[in-house]
Length: 219
Ligand SMILES: Nc1ncnc2c1ncn2[C@@H]1O[C@H](COP(=O)(O)OP(=O)(O)O)[C@@H](O)[C@H]1O
Ligand SMILES: Cc1cn([C@H]2C[C@H](O)[C@@H](COP(=O)(O)OP(=O)(O)O)O2)c(=O)[nH]c1=O
Image (cartoon, rainbow, N blue to C red; front, top):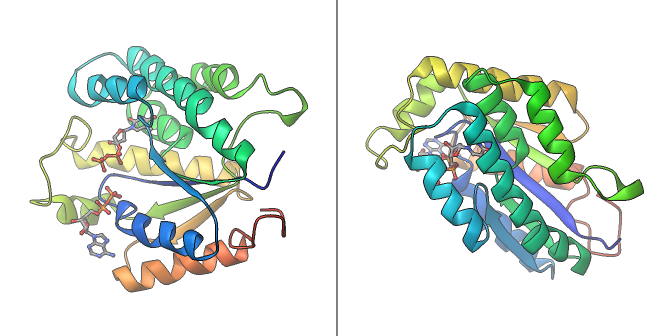
């Protein structure tokens, strides 16, 4: 395997993660890395079509989970694995942690089923095991503050229209996922100013060795 780096950003809607994507991309590019910037659900034509369905249509949580994992499978096969094999940095706005947080905790769907889907979709890599991000930046913010930030910022989609109780469950889902994989997750205190949040992001990337040149320290 190459020195590809798989980096994901997670957090409830309005936590502020997208606000730092441009700067993160620039940071890696300044170090000579090729960056593939992508998102979930999405990242391929098929997955973007599925994203439209998931964000616009009402459906039961199993159907929703199957669609996000179908989108993920296409994204992994078409984009993520080839990019990592080339040694690129994959900068991905959300991945499977969002499924455990939104469908699992938020919609109270069976996490055993989600774990099975995770094995199917991210497995099959022999000794390499499950495909998982090397580093996940978790933007942690109280749902009330996120709602204030989102009010008026953009037209709410299906999830963004959910009540604050939904986002409390989603936030708890992220906390549980982070506690179960403390090596991969970095908690970012997203309640701070934009500049302070950026400082935390940069510090976390340095601490995890993510800014080392390709061929240097392993992430
Ligand atoms: N640290 C911050 N303090 C105050 N407002 C912020 C901060 N970071 C982002 N915002 C604003 O909050 C809203 C949601 O940010 P965004 O990056 O789109 O969140 P997300 O991608 O996590 O949903 C935007 O209007 C953005 O300008
Ligand atoms: C990846 C993923 C996202 N989602 C939800 C979380 C978000 O509300 C939404 C899309 O995420 P996002 O791209 O953050 O939305 P926006 O472009 O509005 O910032 O999809 C799930 O419910 N399950 C998933 O597996």
